[in-house]
Image (cartoon, rainbow, N blue to C red; front, top):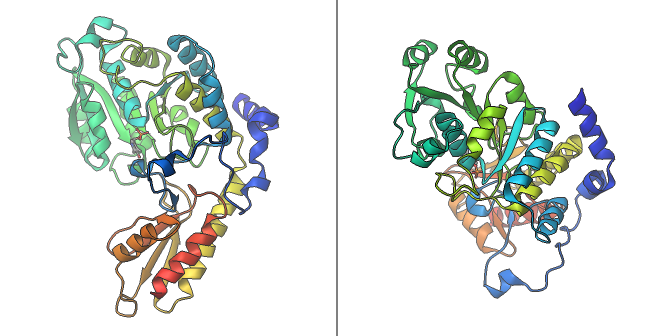
Length: 402
Ligand SMILES: *Cc1c(COP(=O)(O)O)cnc(C)c1O
């Protein structure tokens, strides 16, 4: 109730909620550049810029921050504040907004995983924080996860000095738990793929009193996921700042239990003799991350969805107008949960592979980035500037026509 009221209040604030009414969401010219650039830096460097029809990919520099986020970032450069003090205040505000006990801004979801794991291992002992990852004597250091949840980003767990134990069934999980178990780790996007899903997983964690972390990095929208998993009983939850939240690409959120967030921060800057010292977020990212969350909470999510649907439909219809081309519109269940387009064609009729088409789109003007494998070109529009879907639709059609 309290949270919903807060969200409502937020959307009533002109500075925070006002700019993103439905008006600016209607397809139109690309938004203005802000703050007004003094120089054309990318051009000076000879860098290619592009329309992002792919999605939130680190290699493509993630997302474009919203105007409010850039304002906050710029504002933060104007005066000094103490690093721990801004983390305290922003953490409190984030926790209030998202209805969890505590929160901290990290250098991305990957960093949130490492710091959260570090916190679980060291507790509030700085001497232990100074010893990880190389010396875990006297600390619980095993992290258990399901085989089906294994992902490259789990490297972040090992960076804290923990060892990963993989299991498949609930029985195996319960058997693997021992006095050295530090944490149970969950990859939110793979809930439906694993044999142990939310309810059972949390039951086990609670039964043995072991902290549980959920990596939900790419899992907004929907907005309610920002509190769903802490409400469910996960002790720590990680989100990327630079994906759906449209905050800084080099920021993220670690949400959860007060004692665990405090322990995680023991390994974070400004403390120097720690695993997290290189995962610095400064006042600019911290403030910008808060405003990204405020901004995201107050968005008209239904209008966003309608816009994405109409953009995807436009591109789909344009591609389908060419004989031999088929399209499929789908929405991934969790993670990148947005209208997504898959374009396939009869390669006997159209003598191009998906790689050829992606390359032609990349090398044309303006350059367009898409993704996909050997069978399709895949497109999302949520990271585009409204209006760019028309360019993508026209260029895709032109390219497929040869
Ligand atoms: C993107 C992603 C990460 C890494 O997030 P960053 O914010 O780039 O550090 C971790 N886990 C999952 C599941 C992701 O999708």
